[in-house]
Length: 316
Image (cartoon, rainbow, N blue to C red):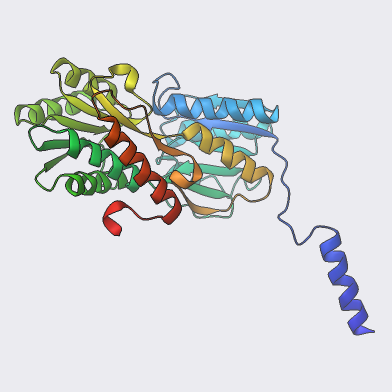
């Protein structure tokens, strides 16, 4: 009798779909950005991701700009909750701390942010595994430099693309010198331009401005000097195809759509998630005509091998 009862329970378990991921209802989605959605780089990409979710699922979406301290974030989450939002994207790493004080209070909302440590059943940190994109950008810089001097203008030390760029440049050109300067901010344009001028004065002729708030003015400065840059986050070839050799692109908009899909299917895990070329959210952008076509093909072959093997050229 006991065996029959266990068998019946198991059959009921699978027939009712209990063995499958639980489906969630994606009711309404909110986006918080620390600055603006009009910066044409990071904030704009987040907003485009929100619009993709709205278009795909036909749901209401909301966003708020200038969400850069605990008080305004708390008020925004309270407002979103009152409107029935159950998935909130905090568009940056700063939201780790903001959401950590709110997630238990709003356990019916799933909080998503970038580049941090997610602690709590309803918190997820999204991380671009960007070492490889930096590596391939570095290969192009190492190939294209005429002075054997390239520069990285990073926002922070923890950025994975920085080590990748350094290794890629040295892999492609063992004679290259790589200088790294840190702005300690995503958007301190004045400091970034000062560092840029210092690099150019030292004979650096390819610069990787890896900060979304200052990379456009830095590229414009490099363009004035007739030198080269590697774009960051967005395809920045429109700033000058003779200047921007390629761009290391992070498709934030695609990632947001992917996260919404995972949430709806009951597959969005809490904790820290990582995404790369294999997830179609990272790629290189349009190449400058100054980059030899044969070398472009070589880079694309390396990227395809990386997609299949998870190994960079220097790991074979």
